[in-house]
Image 1 (spheres, rainbow, N blue to C red):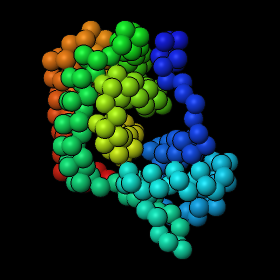
Image 2 (cartoon, rainbow, N blue to C red):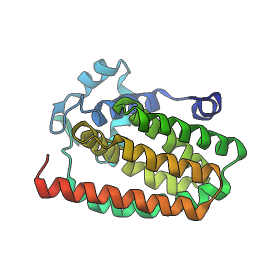
Image 3 (cartoon, rainbow, N blue to C red):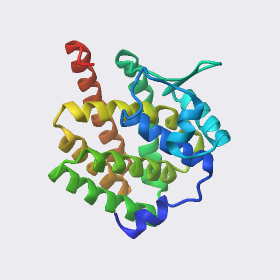
Length: 225
């Protein structure tokens, strides 16, 4: 990753943010399995962060639908709801299309350069598929996407959907060899944002969401859970 992307993604993170990122990653990558139960103390020990930051991060994960907090019983990792995911995709489509239009227009020159660098990184993943690489690149892309649209309200709404969407993609990529397809679509979006083309960026978002919907329909049809 280029110095431009790295400098834009670096921020001073609180312990709560760090706890959230660690727990979210464990859930998304299925190291904390769907349906499993955990105590707050065990999660503190697992990530090496104290009680208050972990508790605050769990509240955020609960709002995002990744955990269920059961008073006096512990924390339950939610199961993946494939049918409910259609509603999430419907909302994601609207929010991401808005982000694409505004991001292409409002991105700074530095952010546009970073989008260009990310497009090149996605090209590499498309040529040499790697699950960990695309998951990390997607996270970097989303954070830059949020910054570039300069609308904290749409970003706040979109972030509520990101964790579960990432978990679903991780499951999908483990079972289907289409990382190159996703990587190429993301590279096209990054280039449209790099070039400041709002119409192209929005069209690519819709094409991406169409593809995601088609994979969901196939998964539900085959009961591939």
